[in-house]
Length: 476
Ligand SMILES: Nc1ncnc2c1ncn2[C@@H]1O[C@H](COP(=O)(O)OP(=O)(O)OP(=O)(O)O)[C@@H](O)[C@H]1O
Ligand SMILES: [Mg+2]
Image (cartoon, rainbow, N blue to C red; front, side, top):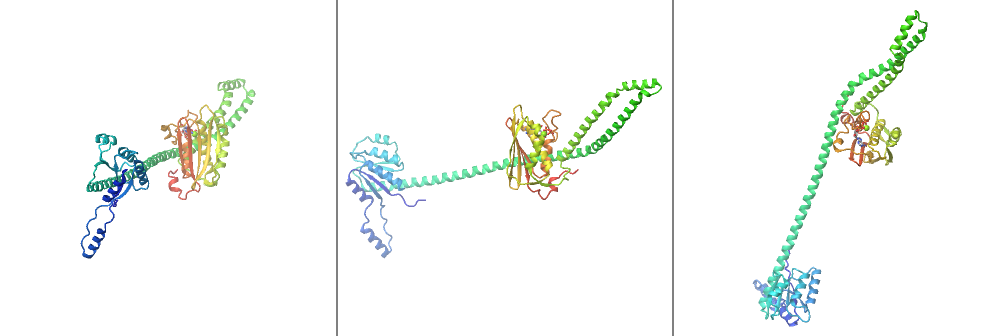
């Protein structure tokens, strides 16, 4: 709190004699008596008499000059507490005009207007100045004690008002600071809530996929054996059929020599009836189709196993991700070239410890999906890579259809597809998810309907040491 009261007073009057009078009253030179009093007090221990208050007085003889002093005092940070202003000061501004200008410069200035004449109607003066709480009227001739009391009271009032304003400012600043802190705390909280929600969502998704993974592993395990022997039996069956056809051909060739002739006729009739020629053509065709079907089932079973991370027997090796991407792009080139241009934006990435052929599968799934997401217009697929701490990342971004939010939550589920029957199995992404999990990485997707989709795969450069626990929760 300010302890020194502001006692700076400005006197604006065109008469020098008035200035002398005010000085005598408000700033009397230290009287010798004061010094004597002090000596007396020191010698005899009496309390010194309280000296009357003294003020700092500055003089101006015209309104303009007064204004200049007020402005200079303000910019020096030493404002006046009050001013005595004469009403009549020819040739310059009169008192009312002067006060108007002084208040424009410093609204806190306390003012006493001094006059001997009824130059203005007082009501008119008060109306013009429009501020009644900073203005007092002093009529000539002055009384010394009246002047002194006015000065004491108004300077004290200025100081009180000033201190209150300082306190209020400090209070407002404290409130602002608190508000800032609270706002910041709210923002942090909001961000934390958002992050927590996000993590919760990821956890739910991971748990869902883990339980689907167990189911898939079970199904894969059950189907795997029968499919295995069907597939190998098929190979044998093909060999047997080839031999049977060979035998039949031999019989056919021997047919003309069969005796008696009616037996030969019966054989010919039977051959025509069973459409032997057609069977010879159709059976290999059926076999081929069935074999393809079985191969497809086998592939699906393998994908399911990869998704559920059953077979993690393969060896991790150090490999270059860019080489893998390039070779994968070569393989799928024919599938995507009519749909989209592929742009590579490779960063500077190190080799990583991984299962290269499985990562190629991930890239292939992502790129083929991106191509499938293109509409009629030729699109653009951007493949980016980069490093982030001890991880590398790979992005496949397309400007295709985008994925609506309700679909987005399901795309990693096995057999979830929006593609027509025969076009998609719905295993691509679930498989990719499993492979990335096996690498203890993560796969994320960001999609805007009508704008496109970006898949981002993040993988550790070095395979993390503790493998078993987190990476292979599902056993075959
Ligand atoms: N880049 C993409 N843009 C738009 N939709 C996508 C994209 N990638 C995946 N999807 C959606 O996710 C679904 C699942 O994808 P996923 O790769 O698992 O299966 P699929 O492509 O339908 O079939 P599969 O890959 O087995 O042939 C797709 O059917 C499609 O709806
Ligand atoms: Mg796919």
